Length: 329
Image (tube, one colour):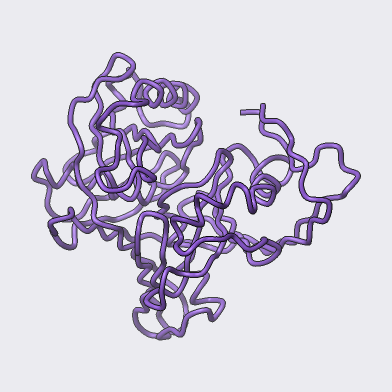
């Protein structure tokens, strides 16, 4: 159980717009966050714990959130070439990438008028994230958003057959470093009834990879470390089901956007061409393909959709002994 943190004496009202992408929550904070210093999004990620962690905790922890909550702070982009900058967060800290969140941001930017868009065509919403510049390609028909394609940073294979917790893992990068493991390798399948056991295995595997040389990012150590463990089932040619256990035992309800990018890098090296139909543990689907090959890696395009679930205003009663909240897992 996490320890409640005392916020600053004066905590303003915090406004959010909430979405889900394939069942995975995404809470976009639209007001009440103090300025987070830094010249780039990656620098702001490093400074966010000191500047705004009380807001992350308040929104992510119980009783306002839960152990699997996910969201973001909007920040300035690195330069005028992007529409938005974003810091992704979860109950344990700050991510370097998030595909399901980028899809939600694309819907949000178009529906809220943050980006001028074509009511009968495609509009690119360009977003700076800690791992680089990504795009949410938003498709509209008669003014209605019908789909979003997440264009990832270049993704690549890092290492194969890396041992951890008594099994072998494949490491790849899709904006964050992921370990891929067939669920059958731990005697399980990707089904809701096995989620508890998969969480336990994910934690063991991640701990087993801690400090391994293959988990270091080759260009920027701030992007190092295994972020998530992807357990997958093969369902036939071009189709897989996965569940990603990320951070400290958190479960992605969606097929995981940046995880799908990392999976595509492995599958592409294995000879897969064409579309990957990527299912989640709750049955939602992303459709993904490699759009290009570059010296830095393959460029994945991952199609999904996000839906708004509510608008909220949160506050903290100064007399509340629970403070910014807690998590039980």
